[in-house]
Structures are given as structure tokens and as C-alpha cells.
Length: 256
Image (cartoon, rainbow, N blue to C red; front, side, top):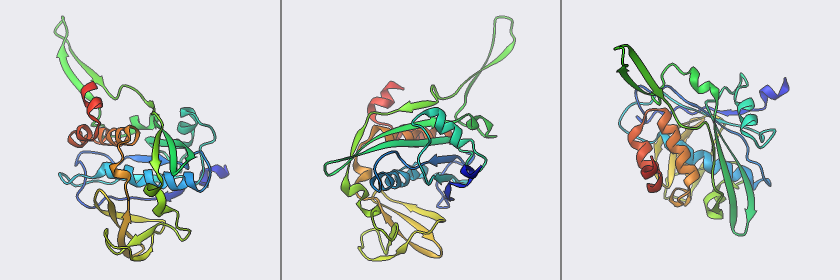
């Protein structure tokens, strides 16, 4: 039973008018990535913050989201293991984003996997369900409902330059900067923090009474199909159609 308590939670409430009014809060679990330490943890942290930008929109107030930050790797490199971990009472995640990391030259090679768990069906608000109401030949009403075509996704590996996760190698923790352009560190992130503002190169947060910027470096500029698609899936489950479509690479939008 001890495994119930291994998760180190970071509770994220998005309070900067960023979201969809009819969307229920998603629970997204990101365990530690497989691979050499500390590089795999630094890469996971980078992708964690990039995924948080899936909630970046200013059209509607957001009800909130939970990004759960796991302390260790999954027990096995399978979607089944991801579901098993996600369904623990202390986690109960709708989606799991996990990955493999290999140290490579001046950066790292990452392969990401996205698992959508059966818990997604327990949400009271499900904007991702498309329904068509019609009548059959006997003039009887029927409803055709369709959700996302697959629950398991495996992406092509991609390379991440070291500069993208260099800022998360500080032994003191994740630094908070005075401004998104400044090099002055004013503190470090605690275990619980709030998101206030999203920019391409940085995110403005509040942690333990301290407000500052976490820098994202060049990661947002690196076109990774895996992370862009994963962000769009999050937006899809929130009913955020505009951001979902715009976030997909051109070939994915055409394929849809």
C-alpha cells in the first residue's frame, strides 16, 4: 500500500481567465521519465511546463486543472502500467503523459507516450463527445456519439537541445526570475503554485507568496509533434476547439 503515497503533487489552479467555461477540470499525471538521472527529470519538468500552456487562452474563465507530478517512473513501459498508476485513489488521472529519455550529444532524445485512462468517462462534463441526433427508417429517434479515435498514442522520438532544459538543472530547484527578460533570481518554486500568465518564452507564477517567472528557453519554438499533439488532446477534452485546431501541426489538421 505504500505506493499510494509516492506521488508528489503539484496542484495547479489556472486563474488567469484562461479556459472554457463548460469544461470540467482535467487531471493529468506526468510521472518521472525513464532514462538517466538527472537529465530525464529535467526533461520531464520542461515538458510539464510546456503542457501547461494547453490552458493558455483568454476567451473564458477556467474552472481549474490538476497536473500531477510523479516522483518516480512507471513500473513498466506500457500503457497498461500508466493506467494502473493513474487509477490509484491518490492520483485518479484522466490522462498520463510519460516518456523515455536518452542523453545525446548536446541535448537529449525523447520519446513520448500519451495514455487516456478509463476515468475520462467519469467526468460529468464531456465536451469531447460529438453527438448527432437523427431518426431511423421507422421514425425512431437515435443518437450517434463519437469521441477521440484512440486512447493510446506513441510518438516519434525527437531531439531537445540542452538549452531547453538547462534552467531546470539548478540544484536549489526551479528558479523564479524577477521578469521574463531578467537574469535576477528572486527565489525558487515550492511544492504548490498558481499560474498567472503564459508567454511563449516564460510563465508567470506565484509560489509561497512569491511571484516570478519560470523561463522556458527555446522549447516552445521547437516543433515537436508529440508535445503539440498532446497539448491539443488536452484542449480537445476541454472543448477548446479553436486552440486545439490551431495547436496542431498543419499535416494533422489536414488529416483531421
